[in-house]
Length: 246
Image 1 (cartoon, rainbow, N blue to C red):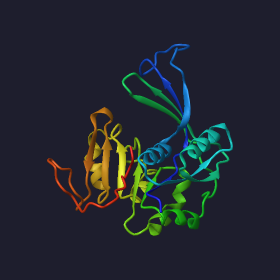
Image 2 (cartoon, helix red, strand yellow):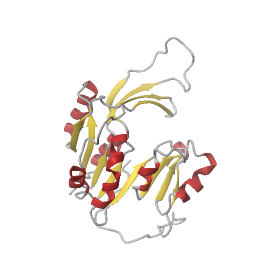
Image 3 (tube, helix red, strand yellow):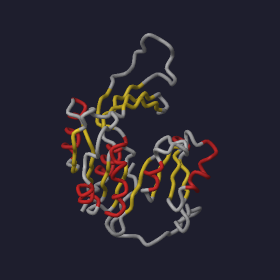
Image 4 (cartoon, one colour):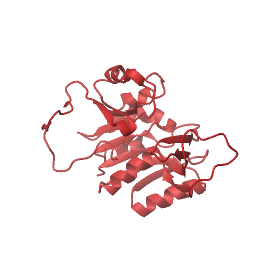
């Protein structure tokens, strides 16, 4: 039994510390040493959960390339159980520009998937039914498998997803939101529409992240509201599984 199954979102990050964002128009800018390491959304969730002591599995595609080797080696060092298929287009990668205040601009190379899903519904079901929680990354190869995902969940298991900088209208993101119980989304493109967007996703619980300003919690109907003071909500269990380790 796994505490957490992460579906998709493996890749490498090239992190560049820059003096400020946006960068000045110049032929070159001297920066601190540049890091290349395992990264992208799914890797962050999986490795954070593993660091918290949870039993973690990850399902994804990787290229037969140096970037994929970085990811495989990092997962092997942690002991996270990885079920991987070959990605003919190569391994996803990002170049993250980070300023002194911690603000980030990510240049994302998604290596789009072509062809049928790399895993069968039966292969997906074997992992999903053995997980207490499933975190779904918004990878293109998962779209054909989404209808089978919820039907294979173990009793009491839940699904979370991160829609990143969704604007509330792009139809690509909606199937992932509809498959989830808990939705994370950045507020960077929502402006004043965060409330209506969250309401439209009811009965799901929606967390709108605001960077250094924190986050907004929009509980679905019947869910526990955010406490103004210390308040007990629901029945505590002996072992809790965070919906999105961070």
